[in-house]
Image 1 (tube, rainbow, N blue to C red):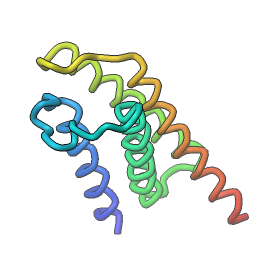
Image 2 (image 1 turned 60 degrees about the vertical axis):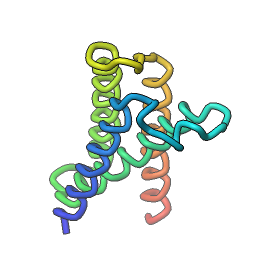
Image 3 (image 1 turned 45 degrees about the horizontal axis):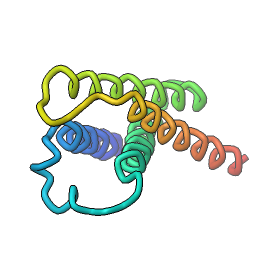
Image 4 (image 1 turned 135 degrees about the horizontal axis):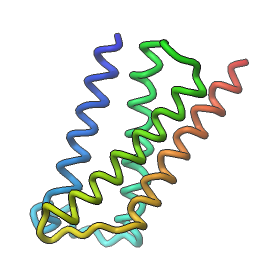
Amino acid sequence: MRNIYLGAAIAWTVFLTVLCLVSMEKLGPVNAWQLPYKDKVGHFVFYFVFTILWYAYFYSRKKSNLVKLRYIALIAAFIYGSLVELSQLLFTNGRNADILDIAFNTMGSAAAVLLLWLLQKSKK
């Protein structure tokens, strides 16, 4: 079962990496959507899912307590999101690093950790 979680987490991470490093013009119709703050909402949602998927994988391994696993997922999301923003700055044309993107990545991840905590607390 843990391979399913690992596969899902890796697939999401690859999807997220490609989406964040590809030029916006190459995204076609997705870029044409006229939603207010779509970029920031996207960052929040993508890192919310990122954190849930990596936590599910870490949980399936059960080699640590739940609090530690939540923090590991949160820290991993923060580091990964920061590296993606740095990569946008250094290696892409048409993409810019944005400190607010890191903030919304972190908020999405923190919201996922809060949800996981609430779900685990409700099971007790």
